Image (cartoon, rainbow, N blue to C red; front, side, top):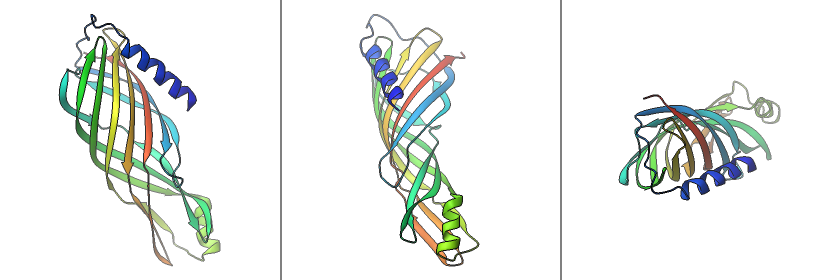
Length: 212
């Protein structure tokens, strides 16, 4: 986590001090990879870090414009009481699809955007084997099934795109995703609904290569 924050800070400083005389490079489509660190916004959820795909369509322009967020999928752990004791209940996979609006300022090779995106998340849940055993042994339940509800999501964020060359670009994104899915556990005891809070602070560092 510390390494991600340090890298993000260095990239931000480089972007903000970029010379205004350097024009941004024209680009229609760029693909690459990213690393995202996540810090849970509540005690009942867990943080994580993983590698994902990065895509950049077109180039940012000064002023107001539409923003999209399509590939920010992630898993977050859920801790909940079972029979009076806090346990690792399992993991929720959050798959948000978001669009929004924001303002972009061009500064040399850097494009700095502040925006708010929102949309809908398609979620799934994997029950931890230990939690399943707790339901069986401590509560006497059997035939256990689990799922997570889909939910609306919103994320205010700040992102910086910085052009290293006419082919390579860097992206730094910091935002706070608000997501409140519920976990449903169905067994012979009935349906156990656990309201969830998967709010997450995210920092993403990505590198892309311009295809054309």
